[in-house]
Structures are given as C-alpha cells and as structure tokens.
Length: 223
Image (cartoon, rainbow, N blue to C red; front, side):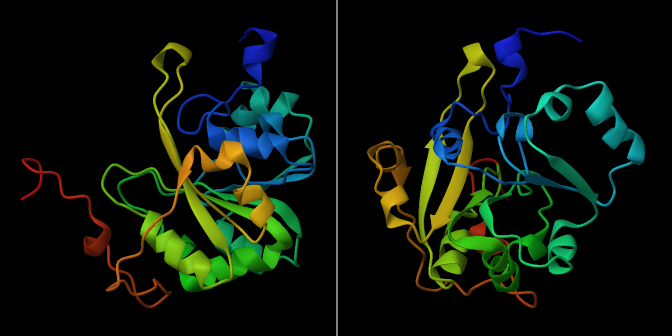
C-alpha cells in the first residue's frame, strides 16, 4: 500500500483533520486522545472495542500506515473504553476524544452523567473533551451540552460540511472545556454555535436515558 507522503498522515472520512475541530486540536501542544493518532505528536491512548478481533488490531499496525507511521507513542488497550478508564489512575490528558456515536445503536453508557464525570477526572483542569456527535437519527448535542455544563464546562458545537473532492465527510463535534481563551479564539467562534438544551430534558445517567427525546423525526421517513 502506498500513498503520497503528505496524504498518508491525513485521516479521511468521518472526522476530517482539515475540518475546524481538527485544526483546533493540531494547534494544541501535546494532544492526547483516543482517535486519529496519525497526527498526534505526544503520548496517546487508543481504546479498542471489546469485540475487535486480535487480527484487526494486527492489521491496523501492519497493513495500514496511520498507527505505524505516527510520531505518537500509542498504547492500544482492548476493551470497553469506560471500563478501561475506570481502572486507570488519573491520566491528566490534554484532550480526550470520544468517538462512538455514529452508528444506529449507540453505547449509551459512554454518554451519561457518570461517564462524563470519569472523563473529567482524566483531563487536565484546562483540558478539552471532544465528543463526536454526528448521527443520522439522533440529535446528541443537547445531551452532551447538559452533561458537560453540570461538570463546569463550557461547550460549543462545531459543524463541518462535506468536501467530496478531498474525500472529507461532514462531521459534528461538541468541544467542552474550562479554557475560555480556547473557546474565544476567532477561528473557533466563527465555526461554532451554542447548543440550547430544552427545558424538559433530564440528564442521562447510568439508570436513565430517553432516545425518543433526541430522535430526528424526518417527514416522510418516520412513522
């Protein structure tokens, strides 16, 4: 497998590095996260799904180049991301990325009050929590907004459009942080929007969630 040297380090599809959210991350010093480690320059942690076969992890390192050619020090931890984090001492991450909600059946246990409190424990006080909320059927941004605000974070929704000629797909990210200077960067502000949480919303917890409340009802497609 071969590619142009510059293109080899560019993540494509799902969450493009050239989208505003990823420019922000590339501007940080020493990013640590859980996805798209091809461009990370510091210690990074990759959580793998517990159902990921060992052969897939082997192929990710041997056949594909993102992990192999990354300048980051990458540790792959097979297993559920939340359970793995619960067993770890505080990691003091600069950035923690949660990218698990694009499918039809989302892992709700990664998007609850208890889960966000866990993410906050592993972040530096001025760290950034980035949650990928792109989903065809669910509007997850208000859920994230409510949860992170209860942990003392300010948050913005960053939306990027398709760029077919570069094979870059649209992506929606919630960026949460206590760093007001970061959220006030002009490039952040001009590409982001505030999320309004409906007054009737209840915070999702390990014992409560309401998927119907965040369903995207599309005329002519939903019963």
